[in-house]
Image (cartoon, rainbow, N blue to C red; front, side, top):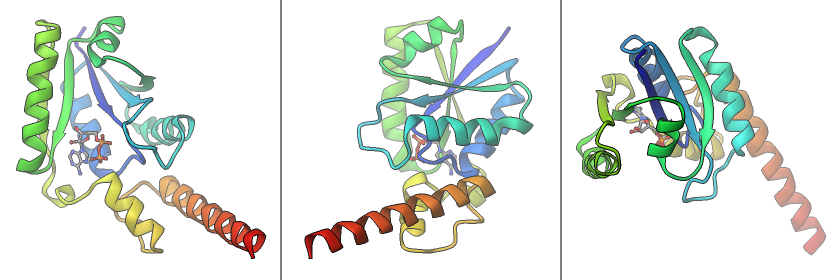
Length: 172
Ligand code: ADP
Protein backbone atom coordinates (compact mmCIF):
# COMPACT_ATOMS: atom_id res chain seq x y z
CA UNK A 1 0.00 0.00 0.00
CA UNK A 2 1.40 3.40 -1.02
CA UNK A 3 1.03 5.86 1.85
CA UNK A 4 2.00 9.54 1.47
CA UNK A 5 2.15 12.42 3.90
CA UNK A 6 1.33 16.03 3.01
CA UNK A 7 2.73 18.22 5.80
CA UNK A 8 2.11 21.90 6.49
CA UNK A 9 0.99 24.43 9.04
CA UNK A 10 -2.35 24.95 7.27
CA UNK A 11 -3.05 28.15 9.20
CA UNK A 12 -5.68 28.00 7.74
CA UNK A 13 -6.21 25.49 4.91
CA UNK A 14 -6.74 27.25 1.56
CA UNK A 15 -8.20 26.10 -1.76
CA UNK A 16 -4.59 25.85 -2.99
CA UNK A 17 -3.84 23.23 -0.32
CA UNK A 18 -7.11 21.44 -1.10
CA UNK A 19 -6.24 21.29 -4.78
CA UNK A 20 -2.89 19.62 -3.96
CA UNK A 21 -4.64 17.20 -1.57
CA UNK A 22 -7.23 16.12 -4.14
CA UNK A 23 -4.60 15.64 -6.85
CA UNK A 24 -2.16 13.81 -4.55
CA UNK A 25 -4.91 11.52 -3.24
CA UNK A 26 -5.32 10.15 -6.79
CA UNK A 27 -1.67 9.06 -6.88
CA UNK A 28 -1.59 7.01 -3.67
CA UNK A 29 -3.65 4.52 -1.69
CA UNK A 30 -3.73 6.65 1.41
CA UNK A 31 -2.85 10.31 2.01
CA UNK A 32 -2.21 11.62 5.50
CA UNK A 33 -2.49 15.39 5.77
CA UNK A 34 -0.20 16.17 8.69
CA UNK A 35 -0.72 19.45 10.50
CA UNK A 36 2.49 20.69 12.11
CA UNK A 37 1.96 21.09 15.82
CA UNK A 38 4.74 23.58 16.47
CA UNK A 39 5.18 25.96 13.54
CA UNK A 40 8.04 28.42 14.08
CA UNK A 41 5.69 31.36 14.25
CA UNK A 42 2.74 31.69 16.62
CA UNK A 43 -0.21 30.43 14.53
CA UNK A 44 -3.51 32.30 14.23
CA UNK A 45 -5.50 29.10 14.75
CA UNK A 46 -4.80 26.56 17.49
CA UNK A 47 -3.80 23.04 16.50
CA UNK A 48 -7.31 21.80 17.36
CA UNK A 49 -8.90 24.47 15.15
CA UNK A 50 -6.55 23.69 12.24
CA UNK A 51 -7.25 19.96 12.59
CA UNK A 52 -10.97 20.57 12.75
CA UNK A 53 -10.96 22.76 9.60
CA UNK A 54 -8.86 20.15 7.79
CA UNK A 55 -11.17 17.28 8.79
CA UNK A 56 -14.19 19.28 7.59
CA UNK A 57 -12.50 20.06 4.27
CA UNK A 58 -11.39 16.46 3.68
CA UNK A 59 -14.86 14.92 3.97
CA UNK A 60 -15.05 14.61 0.18
CA UNK A 61 -11.62 12.97 -0.20
CA UNK A 62 -12.20 9.33 0.68
CA UNK A 63 -8.59 8.11 1.02
CA UNK A 64 -7.27 11.16 2.92
CA UNK A 65 -7.14 11.51 6.67
CA UNK A 66 -5.98 14.24 9.02
CA UNK A 67 -3.37 13.94 11.75
CA UNK A 68 -0.88 16.16 13.53
CA UNK A 69 2.78 15.80 14.35
CA UNK A 70 5.64 17.48 16.12
CA UNK A 71 9.32 16.77 15.82
CA UNK A 72 10.94 15.17 12.80
CA UNK A 73 8.72 14.58 9.78
CA UNK A 74 10.67 11.43 8.86
CA UNK A 75 9.76 9.90 12.24
CA UNK A 76 6.09 10.62 11.60
CA UNK A 77 6.37 8.90 8.21
CA UNK A 78 8.05 5.86 9.75
CA UNK A 79 5.36 5.61 12.46
CA UNK A 80 2.69 5.60 9.75
CA UNK A 81 4.53 3.25 7.37
CA UNK A 82 4.64 6.03 4.76
CA UNK A 83 7.57 6.68 2.43
CA UNK A 84 6.39 9.58 0.27
CA UNK A 85 6.27 13.26 1.23
CA UNK A 86 4.00 15.43 -0.91
CA UNK A 87 4.79 19.12 -1.33
CA UNK A 88 3.14 21.84 -3.37
CA UNK A 89 5.22 24.28 -5.39
CA UNK A 90 3.96 27.73 -6.25
CA UNK A 91 6.97 29.69 -7.44
CA UNK A 92 10.71 29.43 -7.82
CA UNK A 93 10.91 31.04 -4.38
CA UNK A 94 9.33 27.89 -2.86
CA UNK A 95 11.80 25.67 -4.68
CA UNK A 96 15.08 26.50 -2.96
CA UNK A 97 13.81 25.81 0.54
CA UNK A 98 11.84 22.73 -0.48
CA UNK A 99 14.82 21.32 -2.41
CA UNK A 100 17.00 21.63 0.67
CA UNK A 101 14.34 20.00 2.86
CA UNK A 102 13.87 17.13 0.41
CA UNK A 103 17.60 16.39 0.31
CA UNK A 104 17.84 16.60 4.09
CA UNK A 105 14.89 14.25 4.59
CA UNK A 106 16.41 11.75 2.15
CA UNK A 107 19.65 12.01 4.09
CA UNK A 108 17.77 11.23 7.29
CA UNK A 109 15.95 8.30 5.71
CA UNK A 110 17.07 7.02 2.31
CA UNK A 111 13.75 5.27 1.65
CA UNK A 112 11.81 8.51 1.67
CA UNK A 113 10.96 10.29 -1.59
CA UNK A 114 9.61 13.82 -1.82
CA UNK A 115 7.14 14.37 -4.64
CA UNK A 116 6.39 17.92 -5.81
CA UNK A 117 3.08 18.87 -7.36
CA UNK A 118 2.93 22.12 -9.28
CA UNK A 119 0.23 24.47 -8.12
CA UNK A 120 -2.78 24.97 -10.36
CA UNK A 121 -2.18 28.35 -12.02
CA UNK A 122 -5.23 29.92 -10.38
CA UNK A 123 -3.76 29.26 -6.92
CA UNK A 124 -0.17 30.25 -7.69
CA UNK A 125 -0.48 33.50 -5.71
CA UNK A 126 -2.38 31.98 -2.79
CA UNK A 127 -0.92 31.43 0.67
CA UNK A 128 -2.30 31.09 4.19
CA UNK A 129 -0.51 34.27 5.20
CA UNK A 130 -2.14 36.34 2.44
CA UNK A 131 -5.54 34.90 3.39
CA UNK A 132 -4.95 35.90 7.04
CA UNK A 133 -3.85 39.37 6.02
CA UNK A 134 -6.83 40.03 3.72
CA UNK A 135 -9.24 38.66 6.29
CA UNK A 136 -7.71 40.73 9.12
CA UNK A 137 -8.26 43.83 7.01
CA UNK A 138 -11.89 42.94 6.39
CA UNK A 139 -11.42 41.74 2.78
CA UNK A 140 -13.35 38.98 1.04
CA UNK A 141 -11.56 35.59 1.02
CA UNK A 142 -14.50 33.49 -0.19
CA UNK A 143 -12.67 32.57 -3.42
CA UNK A 144 -9.58 31.40 -1.57
CA UNK A 145 -10.78 29.15 1.26
CA UNK A 146 -13.61 26.66 1.96
CA UNK A 147 -16.84 28.26 3.27
CA UNK A 148 -16.39 27.04 6.85
CA UNK A 149 -12.84 28.41 6.97
CA UNK A 150 -14.12 31.80 5.79
CA UNK A 151 -16.65 31.79 8.65
CA UNK A 152 -14.01 30.82 11.20
CA UNK A 153 -11.71 33.61 10.01
CA UNK A 154 -14.52 36.15 10.48
CA UNK A 155 -15.24 34.87 13.98
CA UNK A 156 -11.55 34.80 14.90
CA UNK A 157 -10.86 38.38 13.81
CA UNK A 158 -14.12 39.65 15.31
CA UNK A 159 -13.18 38.14 18.68
CA UNK A 160 -9.67 39.62 18.41
CA UNK A 161 -11.18 43.06 17.65
CA UNK A 162 -13.50 42.72 20.67
CA UNK A 163 -10.54 41.79 22.85
CA UNK A 164 -8.59 44.85 21.65
CA UNK A 165 -11.60 47.12 22.33
CA UNK A 166 -11.98 45.56 25.80
CA UNK A 167 -8.28 46.03 26.55
CA UNK A 168 -8.45 49.64 25.34
CA UNK A 169 -11.43 50.37 27.59
CA UNK A 170 -9.61 48.82 30.56
CA UNK A 171 -6.49 50.95 29.88
CA UNK A 172 -8.54 54.15 29.37
P1 ADP B 1 1.65 28.40 3.46
O1 ADP B 1 1.54 29.04 4.82
O2 ADP B 1 2.79 28.94 2.66
O3 ADP B 1 0.38 28.38 2.71
P2 ADP B 1 1.87 25.63 4.48
O4 ADP B 1 3.01 25.28 5.35
O5 ADP B 1 0.55 25.61 5.13
O6 ADP B 1 2.19 26.98 3.76
O7 ADP B 1 1.85 24.75 3.16
C1 ADP B 1 1.97 23.38 3.11
C2 ADP B 1 2.33 22.96 1.71
O8 ADP B 1 1.37 23.43 0.78
C3 ADP B 1 3.68 23.44 1.21
O9 ADP B 1 4.24 22.39 0.45
C4 ADP B 1 3.31 24.61 0.30
O10 ADP B 1 4.29 24.84 -0.70
C5 ADP B 1 2.03 24.10 -0.29
N1 ADP B 1 1.13 25.15 -0.75
C6 ADP B 1 0.65 26.20 -0.05
N2 ADP B 1 -0.17 26.97 -0.81
C7 ADP B 1 -0.18 26.39 -2.04
C8 ADP B 1 -0.81 26.73 -3.29
N3 ADP B 1 -1.57 27.82 -3.41
N4 ADP B 1 -0.60 25.90 -4.35
C9 ADP B 1 0.20 24.82 -4.21
N5 ADP B 1 0.83 24.46 -3.08
C10 ADP B 1 0.64 25.23 -2.01
